[in-house]
Length: 136
Image (tube, rainbow, N blue to C red):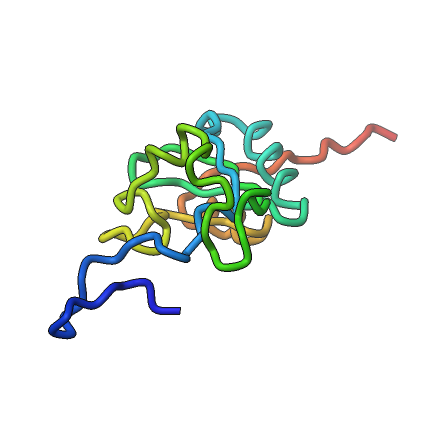
């Protein structure tokens, strides 16, 4: 479905939300930036769960994201309770949109533990606990 409207003369208008609903398919919460192995271990644990991803935004803030469809999202991609929608929905703008933002929305996004581990390896971040051998 095209998300941009056309003027009478056929020129494209700015993109809009009409019928998109992409922002209604997840919940994302900011989390503390990991600073130790335990923090990275916790994030790996998050990523072991279905429908959970973690991303770093362009302000270097970390977020955990849960794939979860809003109960008010109708089949046509519109809000089923537009007038009664929560304030977070009212304040949402195309600047923050994962689909229409002028810049890439995520600086880094991880859907699996392996994706995070590869990123940490590239960044030279020691995130793994080492097993200490037991004395015989």
